Amino acid sequence: MLQSLHIMNFAIIEDTWIELGPGANMFTGETGSGKSILMDALAILLGRRASVELIRNGKDFFRVEGVFSLEPTLLPVLEEMGVDTEEGSIIISRKMSRNGRGICTVNGALCTVKQLEKLGNQLVRLHEQNDNTELLSADFCRYLVDHSDEAMQNAWEQYARLFTQWKQLRDRLSEYHQKKQEHERRLDILQWEIDQIDRAQIQDTKEDEAVRDRLNILENHEKIYLELNKALELLSGEEGVQSGLAEAAGRIDGLGKYDSGFSSLGESLHTALYTVEDAVSDLENYLDSSEFSEEELAALQERDNILTQLKNKYGPTLEDVRDYLEKARAEYEMLHDLVYDNAQMKKDFDILTQKVLAQEHLLNTMRREKGGALCEAITQALRDMNMDHAVLELHLEESEKPSASGAAVMDFYFSANPGEPLRSMRQTASGGEISRIALAMEDIMAHLFSCQTLVFDEIDTGISGGAALRVAKKICHLTRSVQVLCITHMPQTASAADRHYSIRKMVVEGHTETKAVLLSGEEHIQDIAWMISGNRPPNESAIQSAWELQQAVRA
Image (cartoon, rainbow, N blue to C red; front, side, top):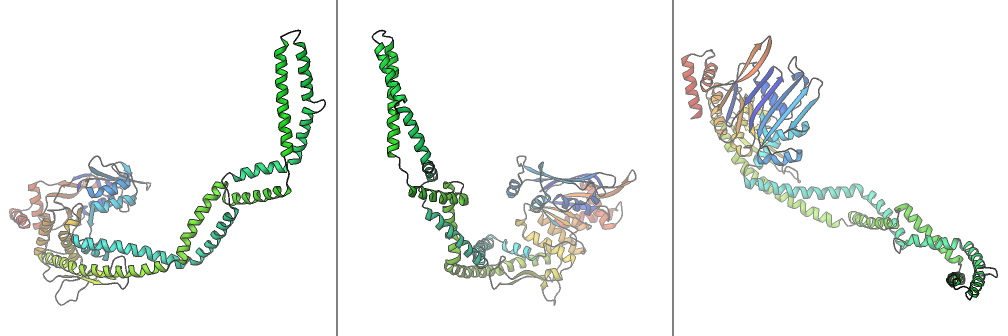
């Protein structure tokens, strides 16, 4: 529900604040007073395109703000927008400056105009003069019929789920036909890559390091052999370290009989001698066991080249090569199934197509039944509003193949006069008739829009007398379940008001200005009396007629 509307510097509105309540909120005023400007401001607040031309002359910006009650159905949209809902209400603000820059916020959080429009569509249903695009659309016809009751809605949702499955399978088959050659080429590439890695028979992810270590030894075998022999000669030759240490240790041992302090020095020399002897033994063992094989060198060089190529192409490490192999095998299996194992998919598609068509036929059978009852109810509501010969029927043609809507054609056909054939409502209904059809539909299907505010901009255009009275009665009935905002020029419609604003244009300090003035109970009656008589102030007869009209509307 819209709780309040604040408009600043918008067209000829300087600054006006409108408090709204449940039930019927009526706006009346003389032609040109600015009633429709209120609707323009509300539409822009809810995401309609704005223009700097709407900024009041002499001002730098306009701002429109609205406070709405928070309904549970709005929580998913607000959560998606990242809007805080702890306050229990929704505060929307939209500002536009002379430089064309605009700012939209919801509960203080910035949002795009597109997001604002999405939220606005759930908050308000706006019926403007000469703009009933939604009402006349095939989509709205389907929406009303498919949500006419719970059973109908369940049937539609079941069909929609089945159609989605069918469409996904159809798209897979279409992709198969469109990309068969491309997938076959990719399969050839994958098969070659998988074979290349498999042929390498990688032992483990560290094999390349082991190969490089052994290859480094073989490639430097001669240098290693020469250096080791030189080291061995230095240690164990006739004048090498080993013989020198042995002679030194013997001489020091001979001095021990003169000075016991040489004992520890002798032990150190013997320890060094043992270490050298161990080193000599290790060198001799290495030289004895060291073998050089041209065959092994060539094999290792070839293995290193293979592993290097794999790492360059699929690496940089052997672990990466193995990971790539797993992914390539998975992709190969998927594409192989898509290219060569599609017989089952085609069979599944044929079976699913028949299931969708059967469900579509069931859905349309229910649509004819429920839609017929809905059209009868709307027709009766139209006759309650003095359209005595109105007829509304559901025109439905089934599709020969599955379709998103479940029908080739689904539309409301209408005739207002006896003897005239029924035609699509968008082709035959006049502006006044469409206004009453809109009201009848909103009244019959009020449960669908109970969380929204319904806005009618001169819904009573083109009607008068008894028809206007019945329209007003219908609005009264509608406001039992939804909030209604209505701009009207008819006293009958104004009589349905729970809150009545008079839109007044005045000149203040040389500037034209529009104000919305909330009327008291007595002022409300006087305004209706003025609309009846055209005289201001109205005479007693007109005031009495206004009282009687209000009682008749609310009866």
